[in-house]
Image 1: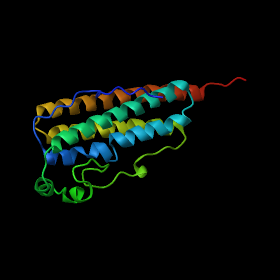
Image 2: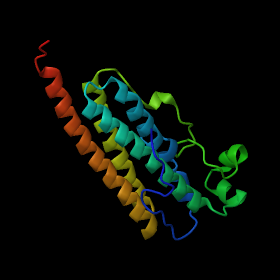
Image 3: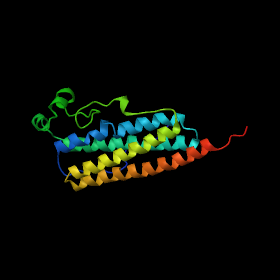
Image 4: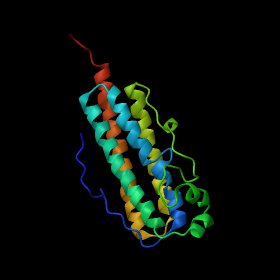
Length: 190
């Protein structure tokens, strides 16, 4: 059970409307390496982790990824605020507007809808933790690319926060991998 605090984990600031940046940023909302994929992956994989520590870690990080999804949604909303159909069409978001108006929808930057095929759960905790570490590295790289695509220092600040959380998550998954390997290699005496 979660307790929801009605504020963002990190404040979102943008200095101006930027429809093109919103199009790029949406990949972290519904793309293969985005926050939705991460949250669902970890919250699903936690059930097959062999230790309470690793289950707890996946629950904690999966929950934090939901908070990051909220940050991305707020960034995209602010970047699109007041965008006209003509502005959306100019950056090839006319199809999005036709189906969703200015509403958020889980897609990548190319408009490809989110799919459960983006996530994996093998039931093997070692394999899944390696996948989780790779997912965090891909998200970190995506945030670095997004930072290079904007000139807005306020937006860059929020993107840097999210990038750094990916680094922390990678490290925590590495620690969990060591713990799980140690547990699985230990002799069981009954």
